[in-house]
Length: 192
Image 1: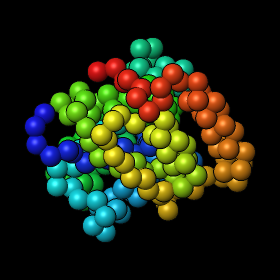
Image 2 (image 1 turned 90 degrees about the vertical axis):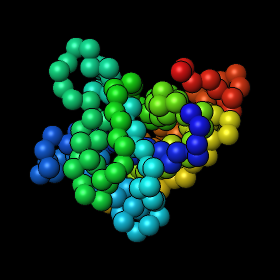
Image 3 (image 1 turned 120 degrees about the vertical axis):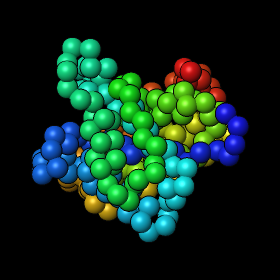
């Protein structure tokens, strides 16, 4: 696609938002991350001029593509929440359940952007301050040549002590191992 490289908003989700008043930890997490993206827009740190938001998150870990379920994908739930906010009017929002997990979400973001006809992009990742480190790790090892990114930790969603001190460090170690076993990590191909 010709024209300038698009700015792609890629909010990393945390849990289902079943309804606007849902206060479960998952809903608070995904909503907090989306609200951080909105805060970045309203503060002028992200322009909505030509902004595209993509959500490749699936339905569940067991059934990411939603083959066995009629449930809405996590990506669709957060996309609907974002679309309902007046600050985000004019933003093109796309969702498609393509997978589950941080590595899948990052790599399927590339796939969705390519599916829109772009060969490169600037991706704006938003997650909580601890999880964003894992997102950066996956980005470092899988970024397509010529693409750029920025990373924002949400002030509105923080993980519990156990998630910050136990789960995330272990997950980062596992990801380092998985990523270090890729043949050519910087030039990884993402299916078109």
